[in-house]
Structures are given as C-alpha cells and as structure tokens.
Amino acid sequence: MDANQRKAYKARIKRTLENLERNNFKATFVNTKEEALTLIKSLIDEKSITASGGSVTLRDTGIFDYISNNTDYRTDYKDAYIADFYLSSANAITEHGEIYQVDGRSNRISAILYGPEKVIIVAGINKLVTTIRDAVVRVKTLAAPPNAIKLCKDTPCAKRGICVSPECSDNYISALGCDSDDRICCNSLIMAKQRVKDRIIVVLVGEECGY
Ligand code: SF4
Image 1 (spheres, rainbow, N blue to C red):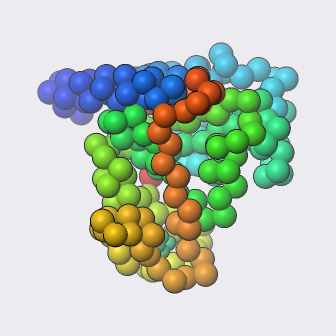
Image 2 (cartoon, rainbow, N blue to C red; image 1 turned 135 degrees about the vertical axis):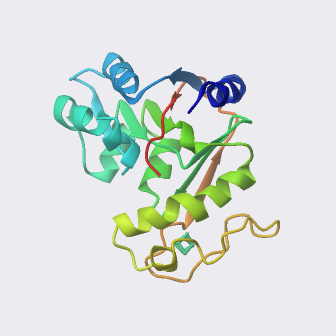
C-alpha cells in the first residue's frame, strides 16, 4: 500500500469507526497484526473463560494461539454462551458501521448475538466494504470459496472458486445459493445498532487478515 492508498484508507477507516461507535460498538483501529495481539492480551487475562468461532484471522494474528494456551479456553460450542470473551472475525464490515456474518452451523453467530459477556471481533482491512450489498458479494466471491476449500466442503464454490449466485439480488439478498448439503452460508447476520453499548468490541487491523 503506497502513501496515497494509505491516505484514502485513512478517511474510510475514520468513517467506519465513527459509524461503528454510533451503533454502540466499541471500535478501535490498530496498524498491524502484532498490535492486535498486544491489544487482546491487554483485555483478556488467564482467568478469563474464552471461546471462539473458526477464523483464519484469529490464527493469522496469533490471537487463537494466545487464547487457547493462556486462558480458560472452551471448545464445547455451548460453553461459548457463558464465556467472558467470545472472539471472532467478521465476513465484512461496512462503512455505515454494520457487521456482516455468514455461517453454516451458526454456532458463531448465535454466540455473538447472545450469551458471552463481551464479544471481540477482529477484522483486517480487506473486510472493509461500503454497503451490505458489497458485503454479500464479498462473501460469495472472496470469503466462501476459500473457506469451503479449507473446511473440505463439497460445495460448488469450492470447485468453481465463486458462488453459483455471486450477485446480490434485490429480492433475495443473500438467500440465493447452492443446494449442497455442505453449504456453508446458511444463515446471515447483519449487526446494526446495539442496545448494549460496548458489549461488542471491534478491532480493525490495517493489514489483510483472513478471507
Ligand atoms: S451458497 Fe453454496 S456455492 Fe454459494 S458461496 Fe455458499 S456454499 Fe458456496
């Protein structure tokens, strides 16, 4: 990223953080993955009960290693509901201050919505989009195909590299897709204004992380 791109991103990041805060998320920006890990270490100590959704971002940043080795990390999906901290990435974050998540089994989005005392969402700059429509397209074209491959799912996107319905239809938003039993985008979550202020902490990282 050159100086001009950084300047352009700076304005977008500022707008996104302001709109996330307006929606009652606690939003913060860090420049690097290392800074993201340092921030997480300052928030979560060894006594904390933690759980997480599957996430390349959490692995890329070293955050998964930290919480799984240094805190009371729970692997049972149901324990996520009593965690002090639930950690996840995002499939996309819009400049309007919304967070978009898509799940197959949906343990991740259900825990994000209700249960854990605090939720921390760590997302690289590659997850930043303008609108929810862009977020939907991002998942279908950039996020789901490599995720399906990583999870060894027998889906069309794993073979074609793109969803069978890669656009965002006005009538179906993100409902259109494949009929595969292995489908990984079954339920979609759009997080907008939160009632509980600062329950969800968003850490936007100034580097590409995950898909
Ligand atoms: S609907 Fe099916 S083909 Fe489309 S992205 Fe999801 S899993 Fe892949």
